Length: 207
Image (tube, rainbow, N blue to C red; front, side, top):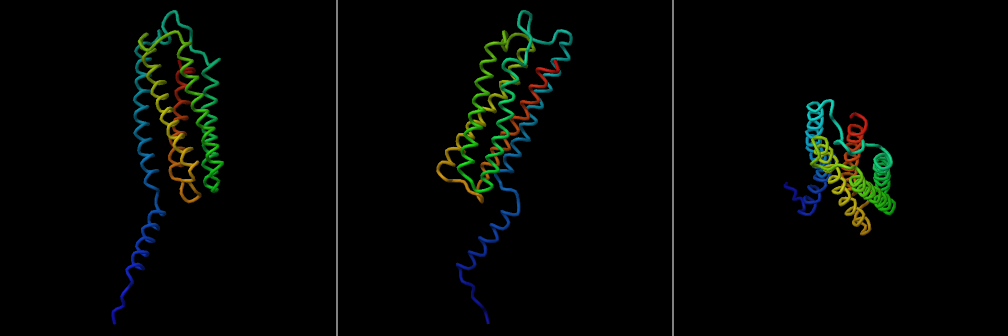
């Protein structure tokens, strides 16, 4: 005797199976973010290679052009570095909050991270006005502004992502079960922070 399986039951079974497979693997947005970061690692790797190549070519005369002050970690570079590193912690607090299902705390931590990120950018722009040299002032100026400028652009992109996260959280779009976007943006933000630590160490301590 042939047993007919109801269409609705078959569809429910198929959906459940698909969801089970989806939960078993890494969410597609996270995979996409990791692949994007892998490409960015190669991008910044090329920039760092350019820096060290230019430094090797101009050995003995590497640094800001004549007449410009030496790069100093105070009063701007170190404080904004601390601010950006702190933003990684606030971002992670937001991730932990949404993992608990606390969307309000996640939104507040995200907003604080955004404020710290914007503060970093403002500090970096102000620092540019105090350096005493521009992007066209020798090889050092070109490489310095290229490295820090591209990083600043990435911080700006992260700030846009944080703004979107906060807006979506205000509309109740995240939950304990559904917060892949929060995880993806947090990974990107941590990457941006790690790159800056490498930049800061290279530009200010390995001259």
